[in-house]
Length: 558
Image (cartoon, rainbow, N blue to C red):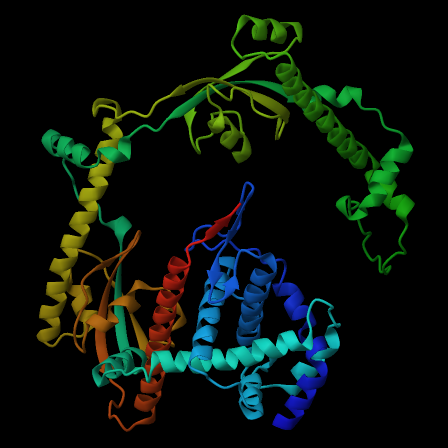
């Protein structure tokens, strides 16, 4: 198998990886945030040396970060991460290879390279193993790409083997304490049998008096929640699509051509079937289909063109205002609006993400309105559901902190809800104590839950499960988060959510075999050691990269 892999990769490197690198190397021109001066500014040329590579040169950046992108794609089976992550990986990879050169790590042998190729997820089947058919079908599906050569792919594969070797040297064996292994095994492989008692928050309706001094104190502590943000007041001129419908004339040929562009937009209404009619599907008849919806097609096209006329008129208005250097809300501007027979409408000041009442403006119009200032008083032409419009800045009201009186109702409602939530949690402590007392007295959890008179609890039992494979109903439940803090026979504190409250009862907990000779122990030990080693090598390489960028401060050539 390995010999076949070697022969195949030797003869088909260009074909296999042509598209891979075409996807990943699309002019990587990176600016390294950790190192100042990469790139150009004005007439100056900056150079940023990094282990002998000048990152300011486009060709160098494309090779280094293109190699990194291809390395990622081969290892994970797709191009994972954004450009900044690829950039960070590329810098660490370059630093590691430079360090490998200093340590005189040899080039990989044929067997090492073959083993590395067999482990690439880009060519793994459904079972995670190397799939020759997957490789062959992928090879047949792509064409050679002139942007990549066999030498480029060979370099990436060879460098990745040396990169892995260097990481293992830097990370070491990844020593992990036996206690950490056991902790992870208990968390991952313990078997839990639980019951969950649920109460509805909506049913909890205590009487909460609002004392004036308590309300004032609450407002002072939470005044930031009631700060009124800046608001902008605008005027606008509207060009309604309906006003331009009369200006649109259409020929039958135009209507038919518009229909033929996309007939599926205008499905004809279903024909009523007579009782006992057993006729099959009728042959297509485009002329009849069009005739059935011609009125709808004509109206749609007419509305579309009228909307274009409205948009053009709005754009012409902005151009005229610019060319005549008119300033909104001045006599010259008011005269221009009057002479143009336009109506200037006003909108009361509103804040960000607040839609003025009755207008139905879309988010783009709201956003553009908030951008208007005394220095930028006129918006571009903006489309809305009724046509197009142009906004004019009128005023901006500053943010301010109101007194309690104007917002008293809102503060009182928030205060009551805050106190209700606090009371709900406090009641949970009382109910938990009651549950635990009855359980100690020998009651079942169901009987104990039914005996709590202060809240109504519904109990559900769950069969034994492990954390990594919980019952589907519990996959997103907060009940799973408290398991690690509980032992057999214990009841959790109340777990409040927006609309529920939960108590978790650990009916039974079975820990896995924690003997250090068991397969699960040695397997977990190997996994945690690998994680520890990878983390250590990554942190060390990150420091090496930062020091190299800092040491080689960009030099400036004029």
